[in-house]
Every structure is written in structure tokens, then in C-alpha cells.
Length: 143
Ligand SMILES: [Zn+2]
Ligand SMILES: [Zn+2]
Image (cartoon, rainbow, N blue to C red):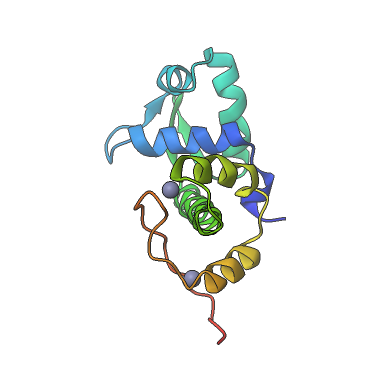
């Protein structure tokens, strides 16, 4: 099973929060994660603990930061989400609708499936919101 397929929506949100708040010199305290998730610290911790077990975040003195693996997982997640958005836009969904629909499937899709969709969509450079879609890197493209 691929890493993304093992994550919950809340765990992905937690990764996004850490990515947005951390700086090269500052890790993210539990209470910042909790307030961004709008939950109490114990439930924020219940999202952080499995992320740490998967090696996606590192925690020190109660503060979290993304590991290189966490960072690449987030890049993959955004690629899955945006390729799915592109597909839904093409079949007539509005930009807001594409985001909602993409969330229904983005964690469940395997990387190969996303690559096939990306290929059939003509390798779009951006999602319907103008956010970049990273190319199918490291995976040979077949004509
Ligand atoms: Zn592609
Ligand atoms: Zn988008």
C-alpha cells in the first residue's frame, strides 16, 4: 500500500499545517497544530503520532517538522489532488466543485493510476486554480 493510501484526511491536513507554519529554524508546537485543526491538543496528537510512526514528521520537545519523506508525500498528495481536479474540470465541474470532488478520491488513487490520468489529460501544467502540477517525474512516459 502506498503511503498516501494509508493516510486519513485529517493526517494530510496536519502535514499541510506543519508545512505552512514551520520555518528552517522553527518547528511547530502542538498547540499551533491543534488550533489550526480547530481541535484540542490531545486530538491533534492523535493525528501527529501516526505521522511520526510513518516517518513523515519528526517530533522534538513537543514540536513537529516535516521529514524529507513527509515533504515528498505532500508533493505527491498535491499532484494527486490537482490531476483529479483537472479531470473533473474537463467533465464540467466548476473550480470549487473540482476541489471537493478531488478530495473524495485523491488519497485513494495509486501513483500509477494518477500517472495514467495525467497522461490522458495531456500532462496539464496547472490545476483549475492555477496551482502547478509537478510532472510525472522519475517515471518513464510511454507514448
Ligand atoms: Zn504527467
Ligand atoms: Zn486546485
